[in-house]
Length: 593
Image (cartoon, rainbow, N blue to C red; front, side, top):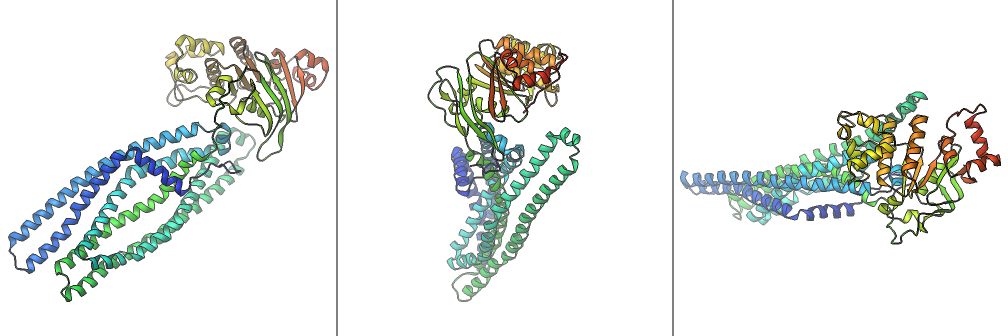
């Protein structure tokens, strides 16, 4: 579950293990092939020290150079076989890693797109950006590089240790006991590493959030001279990030020196015990030499395993953050009931944000199918909050918002979008052509339908002037659109989506008044017979509407036609006089919150 701060959850150890097991099962044949090839390579590698021991015994027995040469040839052949098998194993493991990384990325994007908009907004762009970039990249490095190498060296270490036991159980036992300091150091490190790396990831997200928020609000920061405040906030976030990185660095500076010192203990133990056993005739000198070589050889893969284990803690924390998306609140499962009609009913609705007072205080409103309703009021009256509830983005704390008798928030996303679409002034132009940006709404639309949608919102003129028309690339590396053009593309997508109810929350705020009015009238003509709810910041929208709802302090205080409300000489009439002016000239917006 998300916390009060809106932070996205982090998966626990058990969930991460289950997720890793699912990834392995999804490409089990490749994983098994990599494991088998690594086992064969490790088997070829352990033959060398045993053959060296045989050479020692052969020389002590007085054998000639021919016997030594034959054994040396076998050592060479085994080394060559190990090289070929190890490279083959790495190739198979890397292919497994790339395919698995693709699954991780696809699953992350699918889960992210399935999150309710309210959850995404509370989480902030910084955390999502950090999880989708740095954390996924770290997981990718593990799957592509660290994972395969860890598998290779772990198998080699096990085979080498097994070879020592095969030479002499006593040598193997004392060699294993000599690894006790290594085991203690690993245990100490693992108890602390996961939390430290999770804290480092959270600090990275906080830095990303500060940077993203400052960049997005750069004009506001400059206008209100907030540079010092934003710089201070950035420095504070960076200081937390620095301390979290020093924490993980401190763990490594204790862990690795401890392990390096401990490597000499197993070798010394095998030599001492082997010498004692040889002195009593219980073991040959060749076996002692081979055992010492094995334990010396054992430190190389063990060292690599421990290095990769340390890197695995960082990637494990990143994987926990990536998998945590699956535990975020999901959109409710859609009800099987179909709305009886397109009538929207708001009854006794109350709503409050987590860190604020009550925004809606018992709103009652009925929106008739096919009518044009304008919602007006001063900033902070609750207009935008109401629009989000009408669009099913948020659910009311109490009361109900229904369409055709079915709660809006219970409709599955696909069905909800066929009923209601909310359009705000925040629009995004996707990388790709104009055509690509429009086909998002209706993939099967023809060029004629695309031009008709563009014409409905007044965008066909500037699109026809583009070098390649509908095929002109937009965004980075292509044509850069301004705010009004981005809004027109978003509105054209709405026309193509063809919803029954359209909610416009300052959707034309970035357009100049003449263009805005032309666009709104064009939309009204295209959406004739459909319900249009406009959060009005220019009162000409209210003047053209069938009815006007006036909001004050979280309540609908007036409801009627423009003429009726002006004649009533209440709050709407005061807004109209303020906006329209005594000289008949429109003054500007009446409030945008």
